[in-house]
Image (cartoon, rainbow, N blue to C red; front, side, top):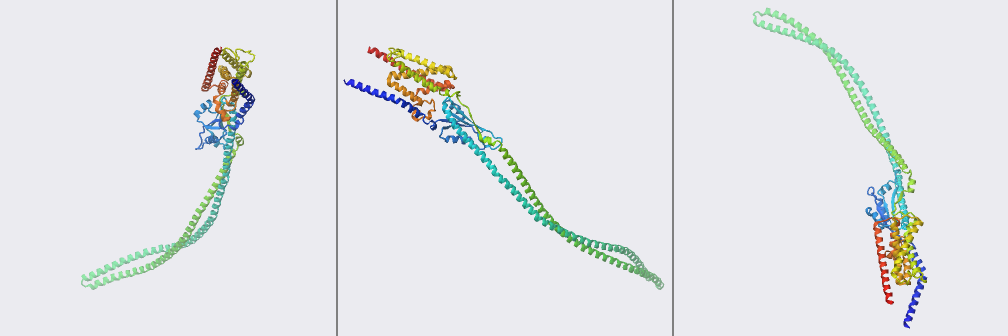
Length: 599
C-alpha cells in the first residue's frame, strides 16, 4: 500500500512537471529567443573589429594614428589595434568580424585636401561575412559613422586651412599699406631735401657769380700787367744800351787808368819830366773828356733805367691787382665749393629718398602681385571643393567570404535547426508510435542495436535529402560538394544520436530537454546575430552547444574553406558523434542484457 502511494505520488509529480513544461514551452521559446535578440544593436561593445593603420604620416603628423586611437576609444564596437602582418590571419581565423585598414597616404591626402590636386582617401573595410553575415551588416553602419566622422574632419581641415588663407589676405593688404607708407615717407623726404637742394643751387649760383666778378678783376690786372711788361721789355732794351755805355766808360776809364799809370811811370823814369807831363796831361785830358762823355751817356741811360723802374712799378701794381682778383676768385671758388657740397649732400639725400620711393614702390608691387597670385591660387583650390567635401573619402569593401544572397548567410543556421527538429520529430513520431506501425523504430523494439542503426540510416537519408532539395530549390553554390553533403549527413547523425540519448535515457523528460536545447541553440549559437551581442549567460554556453560547430562547418561548405577552421570543426563534431553513438550503443547493449535477464 505504501509503495502504491509513493508510485501515485511520483506519477502526480511527473504529471505536474509535464503539464508545467507543456504550458511553459511557448513562454520559454519566446522568452529565450526574444531575450537573446532583444537589443543586439545595443550590445555591440563586444563585437571585435580590427583596425590596421598603414598611414606613413607627413612631417611627424599621422592622422591615421589619430583615427585609430579615436576608434579604440569608442565603445560602440570592440575596436582593437592589429598589425598588418597579423591582420588577414586574424580575420580568417574569425578573431575579428571585420578589419578596417587606413591607407598609407591617409595623412598626405588629408593635408592635400586644400589643393586643387586633392585625392579621395580610400579606407578599406573587410568584413568576414562567413563568420556572421549580420555582423557585417551591423559593422557597416559603424563604418558609415566612421566615414561621416572622417568626412567631417576633412571638411574641418579644409575649411580651417581656407580660413587661415583668407585671414592672410588682411596681412597682404597690410604689407601693401606698409609699402605705401614707406612710399609716403620717401616722398616727404624727397620734398624736404629738394628745398635744401634748391638752396644749394642758389649758393652755387652766387658763388659762381662772385667767381665771375673776381675773374673780371683778374682779367683787368692781367691787362695792366701786360702793359707793364711791355714797358719793362722796352726798358730792358735801354738797360742793354746802358750796360754797353757803362762798359765803354769802363774801357775809357781803363785807358785813363793806364794813361795815368804810364804817366806816373814816365814821370818817375825820365828826367825832365815836364815835357812828359805835358803829354801825359794831354792824354789825361782826352781820357777825361771820354770819361765825361761816358758819364753823360751813363746818366742818359740811367734816366731810361728810371723809366724801366716805372714800368716795373706798373707791373707791380698790375700784379697786385692780379693778386686781388685772385683773392676774389678764391672767395668765389670757396662759395662755389660750399654750394656744390651742399648740392652734393642734398643730392645724396634726394637719391636716398628716391631709393626709398623705389623700395616702397617695389614692395607695393610685390605685395600686390603676391596678393593677386595668392588669391588666384586660393581660387583654384576652390575648384571642385564642393564635390570633394561632399564625398572626401571612399570606403572600399573587400569582403572575406563573399556571400551571394542573404539566404546563404542564414542557411547554415536553418539547416542545423531543421536537422535538429527532424531528429526530434523522428523520435516523437516513430519511437512513440502508439499503434506500433514502425516496430523496428519503436520504443519496444526488441533489437535495440538494430534500432539505433536504423535511426542512423534515417539520419543519413535526412541529411542527403535536405542538402539535395535545398540546393536544387534555392540554387546556391557550394565550396565543395562532398563537404556540403558530408556536413549535412554528419550533422543529422550527430543530432539524432543526441536526441536518441536524451529520449531513450530520460523518456519524456528527455523530450523536454531536447526541446529546451533547441530553444537555447536558437539563441546561443551565433547563427543570426553575433554571439557577442547576446546576454552573457548565452555567451557562456555558446561553446558547449553542438549546433555552434555544425553552423560553422556548414559555413565552410557554403561560403569558403579555411583549413584550420575546417579541421577544428570537423574534429569536434566527429568526437561528439562518436561519443553519442558509443553511449547509445552501450545503452542498447545494457538494455539488451537487462531484457535477457528479465526474461
